[in-house]
Image (tube, rainbow, N blue to C red; front, side):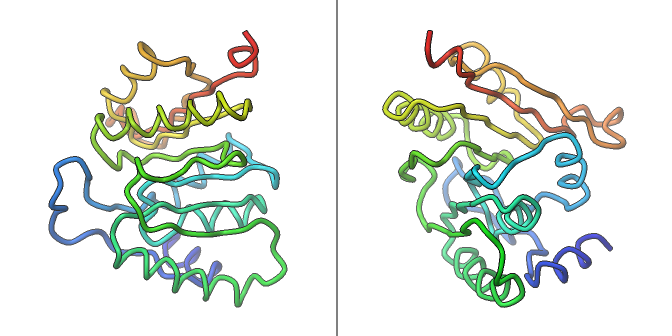
Length: 206
């Protein structure tokens, strides 16, 4: 019911999962984050209109529109699949017809995650296990290079985080765990959670 409710509220269509498999073993099949999980996340985690979220493997753009509607935050969707990219653009047209007075910009780019150029305003990054650890390492390196050039606080948001991602972050990067958000029923599935990692201001200036 929540899938239909929020899609109707935002005037978008984001249901369905990817049929078949990607040709590359490094990119995982698309699955949108459930709205029920997003509700739980944003009961504990706040964004503001000055934030700019980048969703890697955004699919049809669900998270982008949800965050823009809820917080007036800007959001960039990065999607390698041309069909999903086109659907995201169609959703953008529909969303803007119903939300003309909203603040913050929603945009999409059709490219590989590691080829996305991190912009200085980008400060929140979302991952729903979209690709292999090899690609993830390249993306994180791009983020850190951007922070070196334009110092700022960065937060990485993970839904259903993989053990490879966690190990890499905690052992080979300056990111530190800020918060863990468990979802209802996660006792039976310990992976069903959000993890928030932060590159703190102290780390930047030290």
